[in-house]
Every structure is written in C-alpha cells, then in structure tokens.
Length: 266
Image: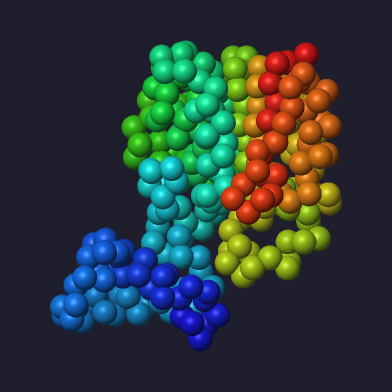
C-alpha cells in the first residue's frame, strides 16, 4: 500500500487485518507469529490492493466509528469524520436528559449526526433528511442497526424549504452540508474523490446550502449548528445573525473554525 501512495500504510494495514481476522488491533500486535489461513491471506491482499488503488479504507471495511457507534458506509455516502462530532457535542451540551426536543438533521448522509443524537436522547424526536437515494439506503440500514425508533427518515431535497416537509417546528437544526467550492473538487485527494460529489460540492463559492438553510430553515428553529470549511465561518455567521441573537463558532482540533452555531431566535 505504501508504494501505492497510501499515507499511514502500517496503520491502515492493521485496520484491514482487523476487518479480515475479526479481532482487535491489540490482539494482532500481540499475536506474534500465529499462522493465518491462505483464504484470509488472500482476502487481506485483495483489500490491500483495493486500498493501494485509491478506494477509501472505510469503504473497504464497510463501516466506521463515529462517537462510539459503528456506521455502515460504502460508495454513495459520505464517510463520517472526527470534526463532524462537534455537531453532536453541541446538541449534547444543549439538550437535557428526558427533554422531548425536536431535532432536524439536514443532509443527513449516513446518519452519523442525527442518529447519534437520537441514540443519546431517546425522548427527542429526530428527523433526518437526505436527498441521495444511495446515501438514504445507508441511512436506513444505520437506523435499523442502532435501533433508533425515535428517528424519522425522509428522502427529500432541503432546497424545497421547510414548508415542503410535513415536520414540526424544530428546537434544533444540525447539518453537515456540502461546502467545497465546485472549482476545488478536482484537486481533492483521490480518496475523497471516491466519495459522492453530491455530498461535497457546495456550489461556486461553497455557500449554496448555507444560504438555503438560512432562508428556508433557520426561521423554523430555536437553535442551529452547521459544519463548514476553512475560511467560511464569517460568511455563515452573517447569515445566522439575521435569524439568531447569539451566534458563535466552535474550533476543531486543527484550529479551524469548523462549526457555526446560532441560538435565541430573533
């Protein structure tokens, strides 16, 4: 995999071995020279070839951990990322146990945000909206896998606006929308280019979804939090300020203003 241009190839090889052998990292590292069957060896080498060819590790494994839960992923759905956990952190800091809040997850993808909230707060009602049929299939599987009976899945386009959906007014809106500028898409890492363009492309300036959310969704929620790319927070803050009295940002581990939050609707 190293010759195929895979960064952290040793670490990724461990992930592939874990998937093939059905054991944990530490078991592999402490296993010494225990023999592996020829079938398992062939399976590992096949997966390593896939990875060397640029297929994302998460797609090869078929799932990825997000805030302690395993989410099924594959071609057609965005891979959950650590920085997106900030959206769930925000919800967890604002919702109290036992509260019957209404939470809406826009551009839900795999459901890592909305289903994590639904799992944390079983008394809340969480509506997850996703346009892509391929992503919606994973969203459905993940709801079943996590047993989130308080989550309602909706296949639809958020550009239709809040009024296009038969859902209640929200206490909180969460979203990790597409936010990469269209012109920047071709220069992305080869692994990222394997992810659905629909989940990445935010229009010519990367702001298309934020404008739609601000215009058609924020007026129907008491609070909101959205993920954004580097350098986008100030523009989103301006949009949020039209709806909320209190607007701020949350910085990720890399020092990027990654999440814009709004509270106290005007």
